[in-house]
Image (tube, rainbow, N blue to C red; front, side):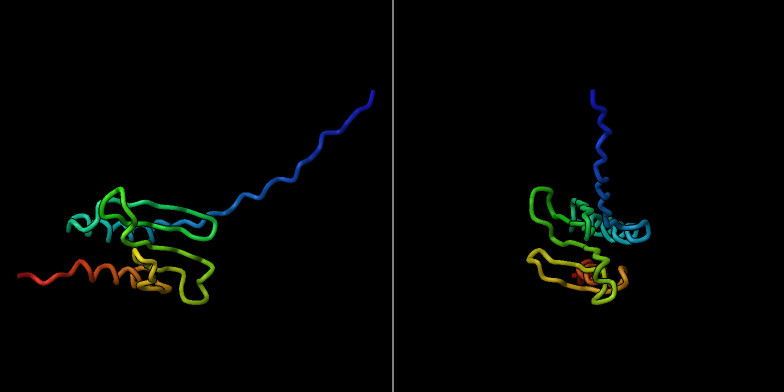
Length: 114
């Protein structure tokens, strides 16, 4: 009879996810609430991946996102880790401060009164 020792498998490293913290999510949801009240936006989705966190905004639930608010911590030292991306993939604003980056979307809320 032979005795075998149990095989130790290397523990797979748990992939860290990038996520919005409470203050960041509060700033995003404040803007989202104002745009919903104005009738511009209707739905949102959040994705938390290994290297990016994305908050997507939709006009209707079953279409492409109008805007994506992204957080990429790897770009912190370069252009800034926050960016707003349009429907066509064009980066509308990028920076180090989230409220400053979100101002590009607030401009769309301001309309002339007729």
